[in-house]
Image 1 (cartoon, one colour):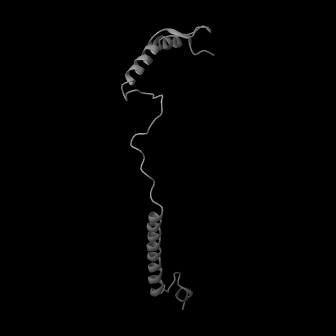
Image 2 (cartoon, helix red, strand yellow; image 1 turned 180 degrees about the horizontal axis):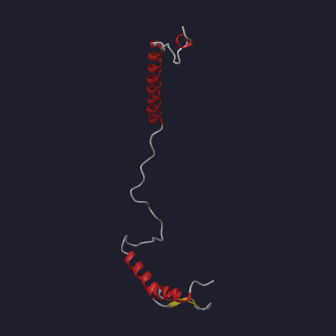
Length: 112
């Protein structure tokens, strides 16, 4: 008789069926207990109240009528990007159209 026949390389015994059934039953019991605890907690502490449909924003309101101020804001931004004007007249700073500024950067390079 060789040693491999006396001592196989695997576990020859199975786990007891009763222990497997108790383990699976205990697992499902714990899951059911957790579901019950969560359900009780939801009954004790109600969910947060729903958010108001439209918040009451105090004055000054940023938009008098929603969505109608945006075109005027965009037009003013486009005019500033495409036109000449003073940024700080006392300091001698002015702004120029963005296209012209890009042309100057290409010609002169980035200031160092």
